[in-house]
Structures are given as structure tokens and as C-alpha cells.
Image 1 (cartoon, one colour):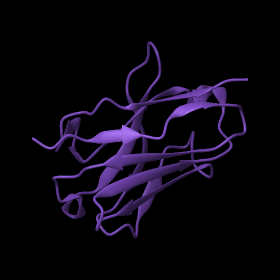
Image 2: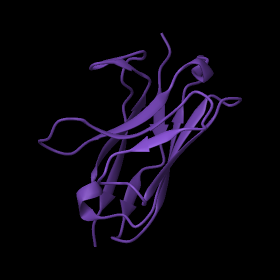
Image 3: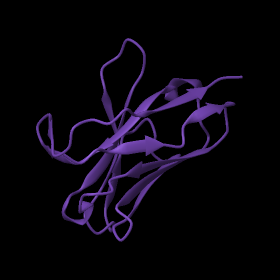
Image 4: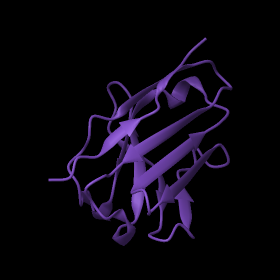
Length: 119
């Protein structure tokens, strides 16, 4: 079973930036649309951004539109999330996965990477 490995999180001040990475080594992600999700303490996991198989099409949650950018490198089986102008409300554990419809996904969830935005 392929394990998704998220990395790149950390503590950053409001207005700062981070770049998250999702490593899907052992899989062939080029056949899947990929997405980022996040889960804040005490909250349900929520959608953040999605990218098509080729990378030509992206879609963002309203809360992050204009601040976050999703990208992918199919040759490296990697997905990225560039996060700028971070806000305290972006604090969460961030996960990547391949949505398959409804609330189902092609991969098991990884450990995620913690992003904390605080002064």
C-alpha cells in the first residue's frame, strides 16, 4: 500500500510563507487528480485545493484563493502547496490525497504536516 508523506510544515508568523510537499513515491500519481486538505483542532477535515492529472487545471477553497498555489511534478510523484500571506486561521494539519468522489480517496491518509501560524 502506497504511503503518502507530507512535509514542509512548521511555525510561521502571520503574513509568512511555507511550501508543503507530498511524496507519493511507489505510486503513479499522474493518473489521479490530487488535492490538499487540512484539519484544524476540533474541526472536520476540509478541502483546500485540487489539481488535475496534467496540472493544467486547479481549484481552490474560497478561504485560500489568491494566497495558496497547488502544483505537481508527475515525474517525481510529488505534489506541492505554496502558501503565502498565511493567517492564524490557516493553522491545521495538512494532508494530501487523491479524491475519488464523495468522501472517498484512492490512498490511505498519511501523517500530515503541522502548520502553525502565530506571532
